[in-house]
Length: 171
Image (tube, rainbow, N blue to C red; front, side, top):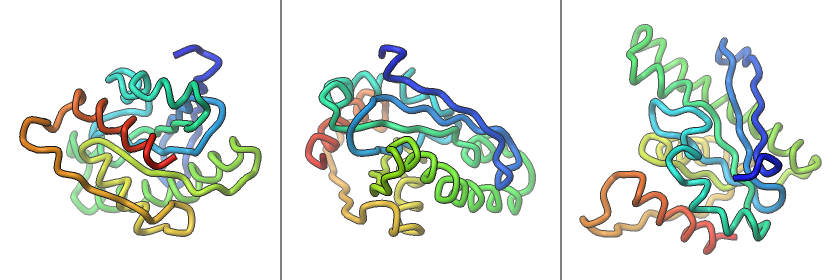
C-alpha cells in the first residue's frame, strides 16, 4: 500500500487512559471501521493482508478503511487487571470509538457525518456489532451473517476473501 494512501495517527484517550493508534487507508469512499482481533493493533489488518485484499476497492475510491488498537481486547487476552476493570475498559473502548474515532473519521471526510460501515475479524466482529447496536446514529444498521460452510476456517485467508466481497456489495 503506497504511503500516500496510508495515514497513522496516535493520541492519548482520556476515556481509555492510554495512547491509541488509528490508521487510515485510502483517500475516497465510504468509511469502513475494521476492528482487529482480540490482541490486535490498528495495523494488524494490514499485516494479515486485509488491506491488500481490499486494494481494488481502495484504488477505485469506493472505501476508506480505518482501524484502531484493540485496547479492551488486549487487556482481555493478557488478563490485565480485574474482571471488573476489563469490563469497564470494554465499555470505555466503545465510548472511545463513538466519541473520539467517529468524529476523527468525520473530520477526515471533510466534516461530513457519513455513517460508517463496521466490520472485524474474530472478536473484532463482536466489537463491530456492539458499536453498531449501541450507536445506530453513526453506523448503518443493515447487517448480515453468512455461513460459508465448514471449509472456510476462522482464519485470515477466509477473512481476506469475505471482506472485499461484502464491501463490494455494500458500497
